Image 1 (cartoon, helix red, strand yellow):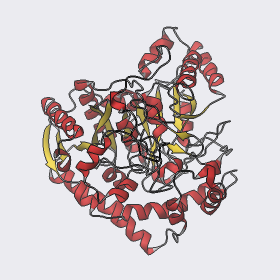
Image 2 (cartoon, rainbow, N blue to C red):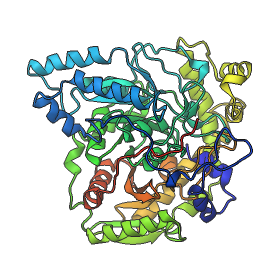
Image 3 (cartoon, helix red, strand yellow):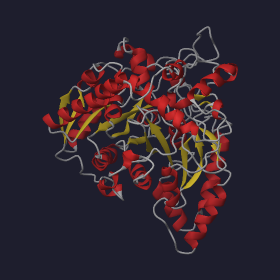
Image 4 (cartoon, rainbow, N blue to C red):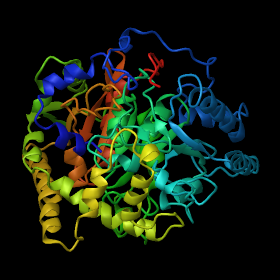
Length: 547
């Protein structure tokens, strides 16, 4: 959740922070602050033997199964071996918090269906990793990375997991995350949870994988799965996708059900696909949609959903389109700004017209309204979620008490002041909450709608976030000053990020934000840019390591 960074670092200069993000990292175990070896100068870390499914797409894996070269079981076995080799050993990515003991049995059943002539669709037999705040009614836990929820097993699948299984995918396991989806502390470190430890960025191992879907980002980037699912309140799909060289899509709030997902915000939360290609993101998105009676926000979403989002993937999609570029992202001498300038040249060459616009400044002028909304909605949502579980904690107050009683393990690096602030809120009937919601969601929608309409724009573009900063368990995350997640998050509008290149071996993403229900349009634009550039590079797991 990137809005926390805005509140924490709003007084700092963006250019200075962009320089910081490419500075030497400081070991989290060295309180004296002595710098480690420059990560960008270090070579690739020791890696296991070449992985046969490295960078494999969903289409590649389907071809393997159709040709009889691999079964779904064999694919799962290979990915599980990959997890064993690089997740808990070797570079110790800590991207996967738990593997599914039923994965091979599920794969066997899907292989039997294929042998009998039944193929459910493009995800049949495909191994998928999902974030550990998404319920699965199986042997795996759902904990949001918190020791307070350790041992909790959901009674049933989340709605999107039911959809995923119906599409024939194999839930291979769950990914680590920033604890409580990065809503525990303003000093939190992205990718760290008390249950799963610190997830690492597979490009340079002492750099942040970003939050809160850090494990999904790291895992998909490092080919621990074919595709992954993250969740976002503000930045938690697009930011880890950007810094891990992925395509990430935060859909319109309401396109995907949130039933069975540990919540932060009823007005901003959504799950979203994270993949190495736009096509794979489109395939995964289609499998997850559906109206859910248990989540009223999805009512009527079927009219906006596409059964096949790949139909929007056109290499000529940019031709004739007007795109508004965030003006503040065009200034400065950072590597990220230079990458954006190159991206603009490509977009123009592909037939797009670029218009300079300013969305960041008017959205920032809304102040802390979003944060206030999240505090109120988090307490309400978490209390409702916990009340219906078999977890040992039943309320947010119970979670806070557990963390205090187990502080040495639960809070060794940062505290829980955000949880405590949420606990003090008085309920969704509060006039303060209603005013904050009108200012945050309503105000942002007016800003985006006006800019899109007045400039006749198909989408708004900018730098998703700057290159990954250093993992810092002492001071927590810091912002690059270029985070672009809040406008779409606050409005509940879709936001796509695609790889835009690298700054000193660190990926940077290009954001495309559109009006509600414009997922197909954004995927088409992103695909045209992706195919014209093909800038994604597989991670090399460069050192030094962070313990």
